[in-house]
Image 1 (cartoon, one colour):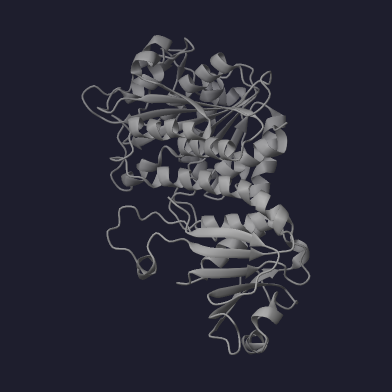
Image 2: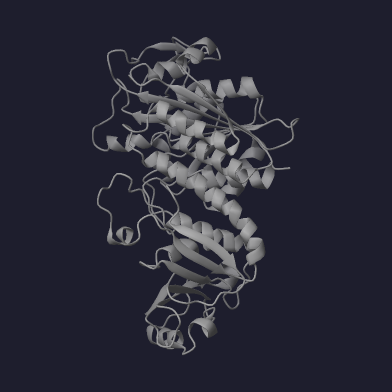
Length: 496
């Protein structure tokens, strides 16, 4: 979905018409007043409204007397010495919500008492883009705001002394915005439109950015012995796909890093069918795959200096006469056998073949998989943290730090032999569920059996990828969770 804004940076700009947005730190005056508000209308309005610049609070002045603009908005930043990176994203998102039907916006970033870096300015721009996102592809009647100037982006000028450096940083933030928006679009799409084949085509489209993409069909997967993944798909008339994306931005000799996503485009639960109430949300059971394709888009668009593999296993889990049954035993690509206790614990069966294929084919430095895997992680962590499971402390620490930097937060959960024993089977090497208790942990233990000694992390994003609480940078059902997190992981640790 195209951005609502055409954002540029400038060291100076004389506002004329449209909306002017001024930033104000707590206890400080607003920025840009001399140019925008020669009659000090804002100052008088702030006194009357007792506006002090508290974080994300705003003051609105319509048709200010003597001003060159139609409307002035003052946005509070809070305490200047407490501002962190995510505060700039939130401020940008809040600003995006306050422009009304204007077709021209000038934002004065350099608030008194606040030092604005190029990264801060770029983060503000990113916040605007993400905060303005909406998914209305299938609405035939748009709101008045959309009807005013359909298809024409709002011209936004961000004014800051750091404009020159901000332009370069803004190119990176644009790439991040594109990746997050792509992930949100994919999760928001209905399953009748986005099946495994269509999803694979979205991955194939990354070739225009320089990503090498191979799509494996049933034929190739059968030859590779991916009976676990294929078993999940056998109840659907829509054929499965495995999309393999390779971005070669690092040195040729460098081993790649790898990200693997669960892409169940719709999950009925199969024969172990889910309750009808809320099943429509299962169009989002491919949130992990969406995050991986969004990440690959971002890395390619910003020309990341790293070699990166992205793999997504794409299936639909349906309950027809050919569907997998509880009690069936399948042989994974690794040669290990799996007793299917519950066909609704299907994501891990898809991922196990994708993980094994990735490890054997590309010998990566590490693997991170993302999946909307268990309701149990939502019971444990709600919707404000994703679950992190890992066999490597360094990787886990770096992921946690990236989560804190982007506010896509992770909480490390335990792994251990006691939990691993819970998935031992009487009839096969393992079973695909360990019962009601520790459900997210036993799911992670299952995946760990397919990574050998390669550093690995599993992110259970069931509570954060869809239906999570909205905020200043996301008003959508789909959040795009994971794209910013993993881009930060790569940027901070793995680029030359």
